[in-house]
Length: 138
Image 1 (cartoon, rainbow, N blue to C red):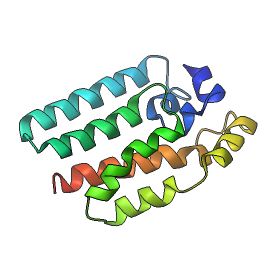
Image 2: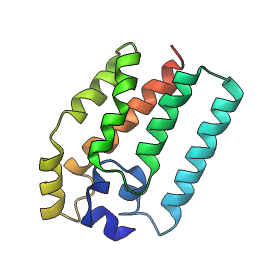
Image 3: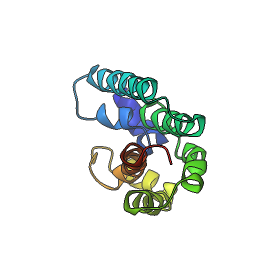
Image 4: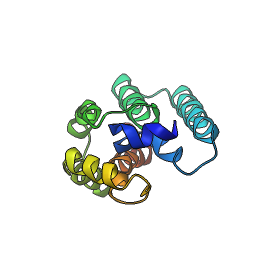
């Protein structure tokens, strides 16, 4: 998995791939499993509408999958169109506007810089998740 963060664009979006860069092997998968179970429990307990469940599923899949190409962030577009804009959502959109090819070039030339510009896309998806869970179904 450590190679994944260096050799592909997965590092641009996937939180699991990013975490594998500095946590012991296996720990990112535990984090991902706990996050998925937590989201499932939240959705089961709250029983929100289908569009909200879809929004949460899209964010979880893009954030925690081991291979998340930057183009997969287009799958998040319905979330931006469906929600009322607030600071976390606006910040997420602003970070996703940054060109992925520039991040890829930076990641290729600086493979050990895991806290630099490589963090823009994972942060954007995390801000989107914060907005989803903070405001809940709208």
